[in-house]
Every structure is written in C-alpha cells, then in structure tokens.
Picture: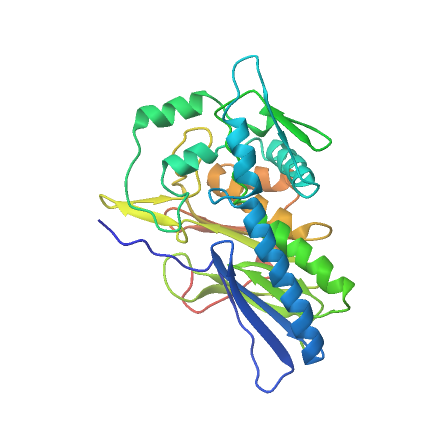
Length: 340
C-alpha cells in the first residue's frame, strides 16, 4: 500500500529582504492559505487579513462537502428525493447564488465540471482528510454514472432548492477556493488594501503590485519538487491549477487522483496538470473551475473547451509529460532550467 503524497499546486516566490510585507498563514479548505500584503500599515494589514481568514473559516464550514454544515444539510435533503416526488431544501442567501453560478459553469463546461457527483467522489474515498488506497466496486461506479447526477437536476427558486434525482450529492470542492479568492479580493479592496497576493493552496489572486512590479508566481512541476515555470501575475488576475499530484493514491502501480470524470465515474488519467489564468470579474472562481474540465477533457479536447470557457492562457501537461500551451500563455512563461 502506497503512501498518499500531497503537494501545493503552485509556488509563490517573494524575493527581496527588508521589504514592507505582512504575511499570515492559516489552514482552510483542506490546504495551506497564505495572504501577503505589501506596503501597508502593519496594524491595518493585520486587521484586514484577519477578517479575510475569518470569512474563509466561515465559508469552509458552510461549503464543506462532508463535514456538518449548510451544504451537508442540503445534501441530506436531496438524498431523500423519490421518482415523481422532488425533495426541497432551504438555501441561505450566500449559498443560492453560488449554486446558480456553479450550475451555469457546469453547463458551459459541457458537464465536465459537475458539482453534483459528490457520491462518486465519496465512493473513491476522497471525502476524507486521510484516505486509503482502494478501488471501489465497478458495479457501484456504473450505477452512479447511469443515474446521471447533474446540476441540471436542480431547481432554484429564490432561497428554495428542489431536486428529484437522489443520486445528486453536491461537492463544491472545485469551486470554493476560487470563490474565496473573489470574496477576499472584494474585502481587501473595500478596506483600502491595494497590493496583496492571496494564495489558497496554489489558487492565487493578485491585487496591485509588489514594489512597482507585478507579483511573480511559479507553477509547480507535477512530477518533482520545484517550479516548472515562472510568470508575472497582474492586478485582478487569478491563476488556478488542477493536478494529479495533490490528492491521489497509488494502487498496484497505478495513480488514481481526485478529479473524477463524470462520464465514466473513474479518475481522469490522461493529464498530469492544467494551469489557467483568468481575468476580470470573478476571475478567482473561473480560474478554479476552468482547470477541472480542461484536465478531464484530455489532450485531444482541452483547447476547444478552454476557448469555450473564455480561457486564453492555459498550460496543459499530458499523462506522458508532453507540455502544450496556448499562444497567449506561451508568451508569459519563463521556463525553469531543465523543466521541459
């Protein structure tokens, strides 16, 4: 039985000594969170950062896929649905728009981003902070796939959610970190913090600059320690990475990652990692979400899906290690020596 290896999805390099940096770390969403504020009064930086981390903690409790909380309560209701008899659950003012947006992005991704397949994620053992290498019963996988759990099964009317497919179990693990980045950016801007870098386990949002220069971040190499490449991240940009090296197990020499293909019910296995950059409103959410369907779609279809989702800057690493980029991303990458 192999050990489970975990790794951050990106590296953040903060060069220079003696600069006016305020950094705080926490552990939320099952990963390390680091917030760096540049050129700001220390007391103000600490106060605003503390508020952001407090918001993250509250969001973690609300959106957690398997611990007691708002989402788990909703899932309990949805599981009681019967043919011809939809189950109905109340939603909070925060959760209703999140689920509506997740449904929109799921449709845009042609269902490859599918927060409704929580039962499949759980079946594979990934609804746990520590999981054991084991392969589920193929018949149970097939049963859940044939049930076609989908965000399209749900109806949202104000603060009420209804669904008639008991196979639906919501898991917002591919959405929450990006949403948290957008929330944090809005909070920091409202409090007059103009220059910051927010890093949630490798999902990163940049605000302003660092010393008059763009923030520099690195993209983790999926098969060894250190960076694959560096790039500059500008104000309002967010970067998201999905990889088969963060949450995975190995069994009989084969790697099984937490990124489940909704079409087969099995972990996607044609990709090592995907990194995307998103811009504009809700850049954090899009960067988090878009990397998942590109990862699952594989070498033959990721470019088409990236274009459909409005992603112009993307890096794709196939299972055999072959690296491809969009032209826009190629212009921004500074490759580490020997990385390719």
